[in-house]
Amino acid sequence: MTVIENEAHCIAPLTANDVFQHEQLASEIYQLLSDEHTLQYLPSKKLTSLGEARIWLSTAILNFYSGRNQVHLIRSKSNGALLGVLDLIPPAVAKEHYQLAHYPFFIEFYLKGNVRGKALMTRLLSTVVKHLEGEGIGQLAAVVNRRNIPAAKVLKRSGFRLAGIFDQTQDLYYY
Image 1: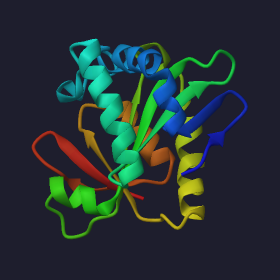
Image 2: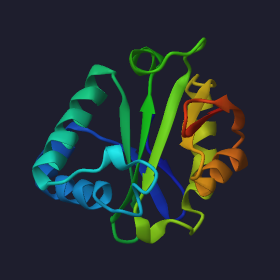
Image 3: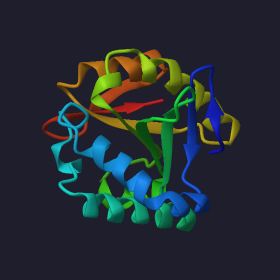
């Protein structure tokens, strides 16, 4: 996926140049993935130290270039602040973690607590989906905690439909 922009936001993939700002980016990732509001429904994703954030970032860059997944950073165009992360997980990687009859690309997104509830993903996700369709990725899925009503609404507004129960706490949505 290439860079996607609207008037106020930019979604850009991690690149080799991100290595040059590794410390700053690791700090931003730590702020995002240690935020209680961000991870309210995904406590297993919580980072507990800056060292973990460095490892997360290094792994994300390596995974991007090896085709394992595609981490994208959601930034404000006005000040460059990291607002969230969008991760695109290819079918082969999804197959390693999930047992399904069909393996589409999976999409995950995490937003900073201070931008949640401001319709950021509602404005961005449908644009991302259209962009992915243009790149030949039409089969998308997402897994959402049943209690995460805002994320389910974002998915529905972007064209995803509830496909059924994924596990004890999460539902599966298909685009």
